[in-house]
Image (cartoon, rainbow, N blue to C red; front, side):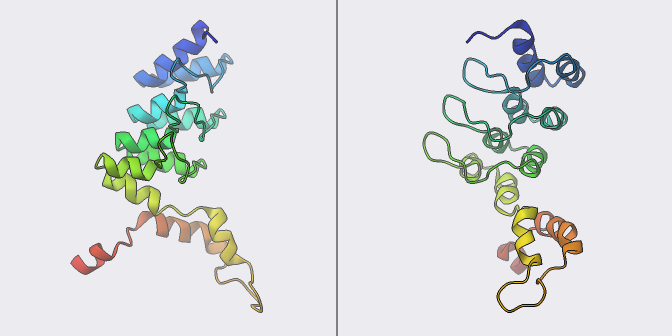
Length: 174
């Protein structure tokens, strides 16, 4: 299906990094999840170019963080990982990007980042722990009377886990 002018324009502005123009188009109801001729969305273009502010804006307007209609099945997280932009990777993870989703050749975002030498992105993806994962530890299991982690500590503990690199090599070199 051919894109109309507004749909082409939002893709171009997202690629160029023109925040105000993308914001204007979204306020005028241009769809946020349009696909170009290769199946890429504005979010995927912005992620590949490292435009963190535009990624946040598109996500705030309901962009599908896990869209994989791209010709090769790439997601926004895969594009961010390939570009090496750790901030965009973090934004996408916080928006619910799936880390285990694979492209047409069976590679995850972390594997693509590793292949292109983006070690910081690999670490960010592999060390990311969702609040949903931590929620498990706030609930009593088996014969326990209380969870292992107070629910009030969940957000702070998540920040600690995803901010500090708990890599044994780093510990040994310290």
